[in-house]
Image 1 (cartoon, rainbow, N blue to C red):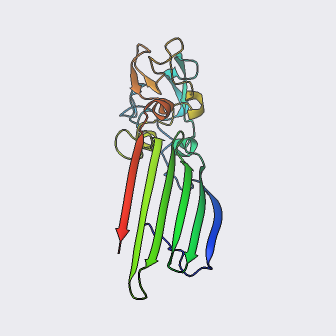
Image 2 (image 1 turned 45 degrees about the vertical axis):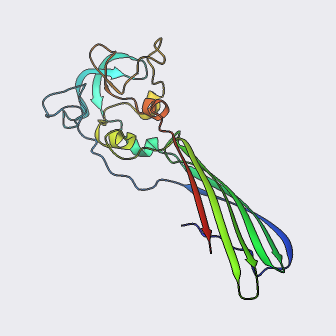
Image 3 (image 1 turned 180 degrees about the horizontal axis):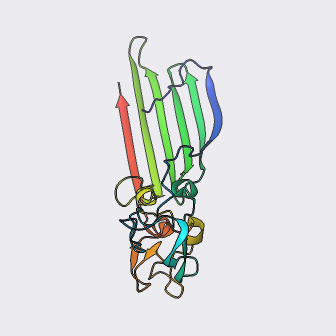
Length: 241
């Protein structure tokens, strides 16, 4: 909802006011994930290229191959839980800064109010942000003692170079909750999301196929910085009475 003020009721002449505000958004409530079992559909069968999480127990007694995302090679070792809450490790503190400038005027025949606003938001999901700029003007003019004309208009420009995708099968959050077995390495080990020597071409996936080239589960940082969802919108509102 957008509301405007007319500037009516103030002192005669021109007035200017400037205000600014800042807020921070911090994620605080997270779903608990099971940390006891590794990759696979059954407790007796390890499947290192599977996203199901009901395989062998992660107590260190089971040893098998796994893709080491940090060193980008196949390793062999005991399977243990990373003990990491994936969503908590992924999200960050968001910020919103809003600046507003108002110019108002009163005179014997009417009044006006001009408002300029700029809002910058950095989302709780990495590499997401939104900027919104708006301008609105509200004016009144008294034709006679009994007849008055009022007019207001607004223009709002919203732009996001990468809009957060939080729903559906392509959502990073969905992937971290349901497709990331707890035995996978911490997200901090996955920051290098391109295979060395194949930057911009081959992904260093969170889960890889046997050949070390094909990806079974995307690297979340690749999705964060390479699957870009740009968004822009212009709104015009006009009202006269």
